[in-house]
Image (cartoon, rainbow, N blue to C red; front, side, top):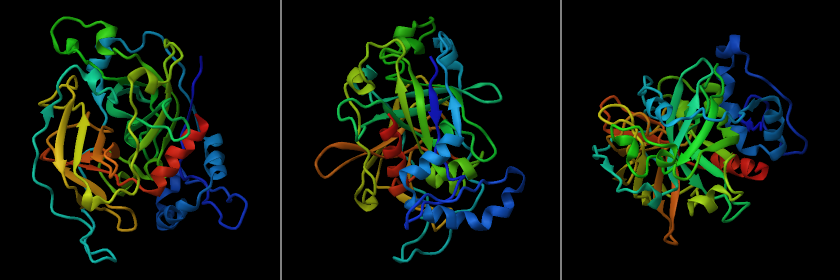
Length: 366
């Protein structure tokens, strides 16, 4: 069967508030620098986009993700390279915002990552995304099962980082995208003997049907941290070709709500993921209880990133950042995007109206 992966990105015009859809425009690959002066204005208007604007772009940018039987064997999963941009080469933005706050804070104090207790099926919302790159090679990231606002109790939605699904500026979509909830729950892949598929993927392999990434990541993302990482998120809709007809949420038993516009000064964040660069190997689920986040900004016109102390490395990209909402429920408030050279801090996008639009769009298409 063929699955169609849809990515929404601002490569057409901005939504009109006076009726009708906007005029199309495309970012010329050969003349990208000529458009840089206009990008910030385009992004500012993104909040005015309507469903038909997202639809227009999606119809022009379709990626097919056919199910390939037996592609993702346990050994191929364990040897996949982590997907994560390098630490920022761009200096953080200086100065203060209109409220008088520093645009970027000093780096947070390091927090040592700790292993999550097995079996991971006790925390099945967390898992791994695997993919192949357009030019070859395999990749891995972390991800989270999130609630579908249109289908309470029956979500097939997964949240991860934009760079886990698309190469960014000038690049293409990753292929053979799958999500494996509670990857290596029993620890079988951590031993020297070869694990079975049931041991590394106890809740199945879920292939992507649709995916949305932020417009900014698609147009500007790169191999080192920059302003595009302030919108480095993605949402996947998945299915299990070998399943029993139940949704992902019904199968794993949970889905985490996404808390948009969360009050950053009131958050106490715990970041989860599968770090795979040394000293980690990608086979163990870890977490950092980073507490209250500080701010990191490359572009003051965009929401400052959340930053916490954490020693997790590449491979933890896309992993969920969790906080407790006023009603006592645990919610996703960000995802791992980039770290620093010393591997003492992680940074994730602040999820506001653009992220909400992305989730609602793929929810309507599910």
